[in-house]
Length: 566
Image: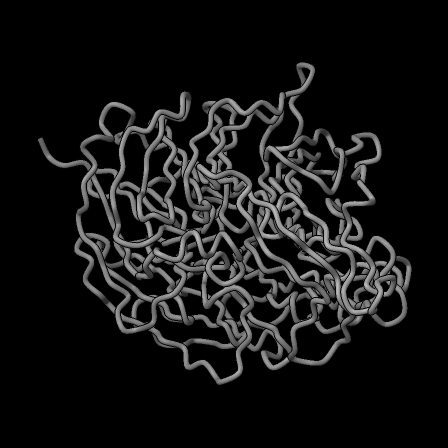
């Protein structure tokens, strides 16, 4: 009987109830809503001072770089991905390595923003993850042997995959990376047990969707918001983690920047780039979309996670969702219809727009703060340079925020930085960078860049904030113990009082933390885990900010903590 219980596969019910079943972590967001909230309270504001490391595991070899993965925990095992498309299975109690899968990557892969991976998915007896050469693999969770493998896209055209897959109703749902290379973003749903493609939904107008191998309607209307053939190389990469709401049966996928960055080359709103797209999980059709940055000219990808939550307004409870966008605005939308409920800044300086018109849902642009048209420059090669805030790395980037139903607050890992940006002529060439822009990122303040902010979605108030010298690039965890956990590039995992922001605990992991922590209960004790390993987009694209943090060292470790015994 014990062996049978241990062999139980992960079910759809397990994933839907992940937030309410603290004995494991079977999805990257601690449930399909990805609120990143755990009800566990053994580690709390009074006891967190006694949190100590239990064991640590090194990913080994010379393959370090950025480590952005969320660990998954089930049946006494931890499944964690690492840079360069690696996957480890570990004994959760001891840290002993059970098996390792190391994907053989071809020459010529083109990940824009480091060789990262944000995690795996569990379903039945499989652990599923994507690779930098745009493949999706399902491995036997006990042996690490490949059960099935599917090609997502052509890596030689710039496609890759870095997100954690999402499990919905027996399907594994994935996107694609590669917006800087003129790929065409889309969302795919496959049978999680076999890899068979069920439906695919492109997120750029003009592209055909498919359901069970048959045409399932165009996305949008050809040339409605894109000129000429530019919709064919539209960008809008779906490269970050998705969310799902079983109440609406909608998958919420964020879409990236339109391609190229030079917005003068593509007049129009450029649907459905820089947006949240809600897709019916059964039909693969778009139910609604909300475009946070129409006709984006600043690389403000809309990929940041859309987190469902219940919003109270005028005494009524609204099925809502929230997103802290790259463009510096925090949005609350009706998650059934997409209608904008509220929008407000969550960073201190925004230059590209005066605000968001809540009646139309559209930005109030500042025209002179769009990078200049290179065709109007003296030499035709470089448009007018503008100083723009936030930088293209965003008020928030891939690092996930958290929501506490106890406090009603979102905990947002924000950054304060700006950029010089200009446009240049560009033409599409398969497998080549497709930007048409130049840039230099600059810190906005001398004393801090990162800011962990507790935000009231009803009022827009920043209730408290913690300021950090380096940019925050890891995610957030909030617990029933009244704690917020977040890591820093300086190497610390920190715990804060969820109500006041007071720092209560810190541990130095030895390298920058750019991954989200998780927590679970095992043998009657609460555990916490986080991956440590500096990297990601900041040291590659960060300009003056990258120089400021050049002293930070790379790494690759999984740290596990629990309360020390008195």
